[in-house]
Image (cartoon, rainbow, N blue to C red; front, top):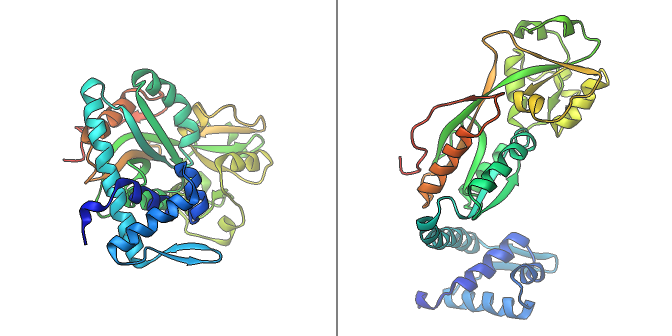
Length: 315
């Protein structure tokens, strides 16, 4: 087996097929004909002496060997990209492609504020954004499909590191006619017995809301579930209950429905801590450090910055 004969192009085609689950779609994504892509994939399989895909009439699936090869290929592409980033970084920090994951309860509120400032400061940065729930983003980090992610901390996973960036207080969103509307601040105990509308399983904000309200999973909690905070807002506006909103969803997330009011919690107010999470093996330490520093110094006033030493993955 002559491993020197393996090319980056062949590996790129294999990863494309693995991601799309289809030779035709992979060829389109790689801007080559399907016969060309299929020939190169078969050539690599012959070189390795093992099949990488199980081909069926319904599509293709990775074999056990294929899964391992794709995993290694992603690491190789990451290192290759780092070579280019090293050269670009000599001219400008945080340049080139950076794949950032963001949880759905943060992305719509922080990104519109942050991205224009980031684009101005780092015009050579090609930011690729992925919005998903925590478990999916952690899987993408482990699979080398993301470089870093903005998540609610703590996050405990092998091979990952985290740097806290800011604390985001929670507000209570109430129907305009609710009895608690007259309070300047709401106590956590005031929510006892209230119908608190929650996001579906998988959203970290759901678990945080349950903890703040001092309850476990109950039939009442499960009777009202939504996949986005915007849906929950409108459910509150319809008088179906109250909910918890992170501060950015209140201050920079657009106007609240007219039939709702938002109230802060009485001090010490509950909050969530948002941090930057990455693989310890990620090769571009400077990019992660630079991004973390930039975010901490360009935040809306609704959140509290967490002072931090270097976010370098080598620490």
